[in-house]
Amino acid sequence: MALGTVTTGIMGTHKGLIGLIKAASEATDERVWELPLYDEYEEDLKSVYADIRNSGGREAGSQKGGTFIKFFVDKKVPWVHFDIAGSAYHRKDRNYFSPKHGAGVMVRLTAHLLQHWKTLK
Image (tube, rainbow, N blue to C red; front, top):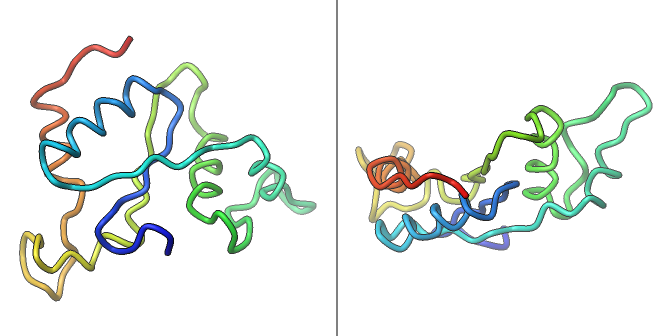
């Protein structure tokens, strides 16, 4: 909701990787905006029935989705999540196929990132 349909939220654990993604965003015109992964979001994912629940309510839903992923990725592995919920179907000016299908958002960015890959520091 906050980023609309032309910007994809990104969040992750490695500033260097996030920087590479932001550079690829500039090169491909697939807009991204970094969202925080504050530890406080973990509180909203606690459950009396499970180790963790996959929904923490409406507020900060994107970040809580990213926080959910944190529980399943080894802390040594750098990662970034693309939250394409708003941008996946609404960039009709940039669709790969047709306005009735997914826009293919982040495909150009990911291809550019891999073609120009730099070792993470």
